[in-house]
Image (cartoon, rainbow over all chains, first blue to last red; front, side, top):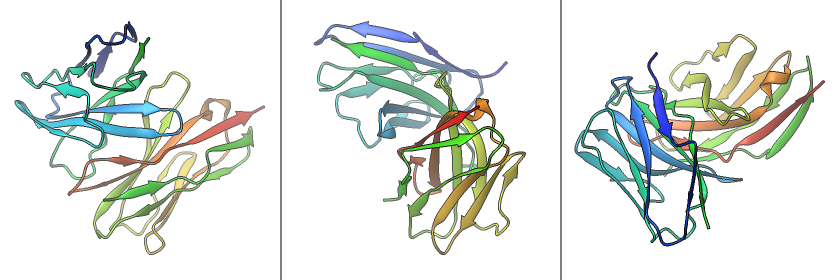
Length: 114
Length: 113
């Protein structure tokens, strides 16, 4: 079955450490996205990529970095510069250029930094 | 920039009853798409329904239907015959060809027996 896999489901890190969240999709989608979800805040866009080797900042990119070396993979690194990294992170993909194409989401990663 | 507003942080309904979740948005564009996503306790985001702005007919998906009022920039979701499995956070979202998907802050719906 096609889908998006995020791993791990729960991640714990010490403050000051960088951490990378994995996102892999086998839907053959060109576009991939990272969202952050906090209680009462909805989903906020961190980074997105419309094509391999290209990505753009979203609304809250500070303290995060991404890479898009393969179509299937879009890892997100939460750096020590991110002031409030504890959150639920969702990865998504879609077919770009097809207006109205819905996002397909992974199951998310809950990151806790102490 | 587009904004999406969900004015009801929480709502509750009894099983088998009907409930309406509200959503308003702000845009200067004429052609766009609107979505409702559902996030149950498992936290998996699930597409509920989609509406194309140029279509006057309201979208329906089984027990889920929308009331799309383009002039008023309103996009409410009606859930008929509510079921316990409908308990979830519901997000309204906006998309146009000139932006990425913008989400509202969500409405937590609790369906009780």
